[in-house]
Image 1: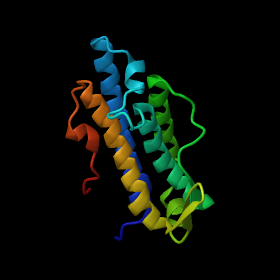
Image 2 (image 1 turned 60 degrees about the vertical axis):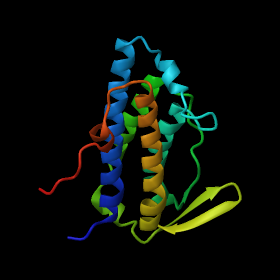
Image 3 (image 1 turned 90 degrees about the vertical axis):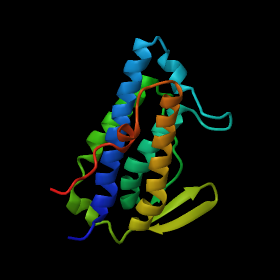
Length: 173
């Protein structure tokens, strides 16, 4: 059986976002137990010119669910219009995104295989096929932002490891 657009998009996003949900929960528990303000985590960045934890989580969501929506609409841009979520709000956003991704059927997603998607950033327009957008643009963005959120939690001492980042692999049945 060939790998499908559903496999490379929804199934991969669910693996990544379930992992994000897991390490966010471990981060919340650790912070509460160690009297670390969750608001401090939300505003933490790894370097002064990097955007904070909040943006990293929002971007992981945006480049997953936003990509699936762009397979239909034909266009995606940078994250915009998200509120300034607190830690619990970020957890809710991730969980809501997981729930919404689960509503997409393989048939509906696979029907978008031949669609075009353009990433629009200001005057710049980057054209892609659906599968190339997912594989060469969306995945690197999801992984980058999820890894950065993970790294921020690790930098605060949260006891998470590689398996927390990877989530549950899709093993052969």
